[in-house]
Figure 1 (cartoon, rainbow, N blue to C red):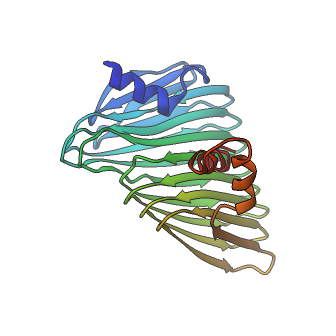
Figure 2 (cartoon, rainbow, N blue to C red):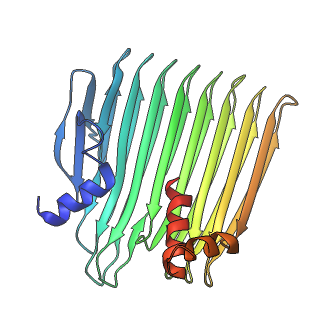
Length: 306
């Protein structure tokens, strides 16, 4: 791998922070390296592009890295990854895609990830998307996440997309069993003419199932973001969606909530707040010697990185 490859991998995987165990590295539409372990088996799909990942029961505190890098224009990459997590297991999965495009043609990656969590399993899923390169071609990422959680399982998702991605449409569907728990933390920054759309649909099917979705978004220049959420309560359950956005320049953010309580014991909440950076925050930082731009960037970084 050359320097561009290594820089992309470092930015999307944080290899220095999370111990490397099983991994699968994909570049320009092809798997270039992989490693299974005795606890986590990676099997290439036979009928289409992608992998099946099997995590054995009772595996504790292991990690899986599955980064994708694209360094060419004119590529339209599509990959299907399925994760089967055994009972009582706990793992961290680090995914994401980095695109370096210095051409006039679009670079596209569409990743379809399906999670199948058995009873009492715990998964932390980290997904980072970045776009770099000075070409006029688009850097386009369209992830789809499908989630099926059984009794007492938990899934914590952290997604990060901070500038450089020309266009993205992120779709997530989840079906939760009894006492299953889903947490999602989404952080998105768009600049220039970039567009980002997010769609969540969560079906709370099991008794005492719960979901917490928190979206922090910042839109600058002439960029556009749209956030759609749909919570469906089919049992005694709890769901909460919070969408907070900061607008600068001529940007626009749209939040579209939908709540469907099919059981009278469902408790479903949606909150949205979109606005400009508070003036007193800017004044406070600028009084310390920061320019307005530096003060804005400091506030944005704190808001997104928390």
